[in-house]
Image (spheres, one colour):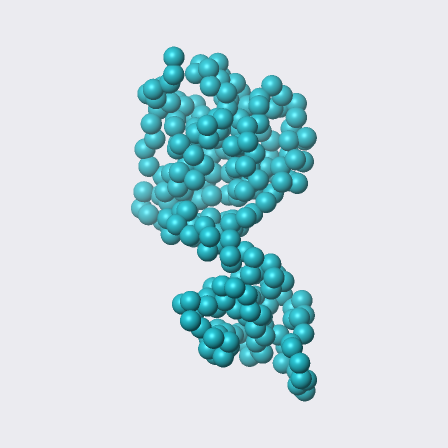
Length: 248
């Protein structure tokens, strides 16, 4: 277990990479310590440290159990602590390579884009009229909306494949493929994004299954959004929707 003094030593080592060298203020929470960079002060005062100013400097979390340091954006320390707890709780949800891509794109556990999704649905109400927005579709857009997810190419280089875009995006929404899919398979779906390959539509059904509606065929991406995101980022062959054992 890492105590306060040990955490301060670790945080100062982390802070040492910043020029000029800055002071460190620690804020303790259940899982560790949030380290905030602050401008040095000429004099010291007794009592607890004051909240750090909004300097724009990054934060760090020193894990209480391992001493591992992770860097975080310039947010209030309470928000950093909350997000760190959510991250810890979601460990194992995605493979490390996929999780790294997601976090680089701006995802974090507990991400909530509800207001933007509501605005998007009002803006494109005419385009999605008649399509039911299942809880699975809304949950997908609320957590992953606005993300651009690059794909590993055949060479293993990130960005070498086809990028996926999750609604709400800056562009519009295409529902022609979704409506044709519903008619062909008698399985209602709702658009959740698009992919550069084709380009194609990404849709989800009430069970959470994700499909890619490509001009060449309709493909099954994954049984749930997490599995689908892994497939979209890693790439690889997909099953044709027509090969699925659809209920009669």
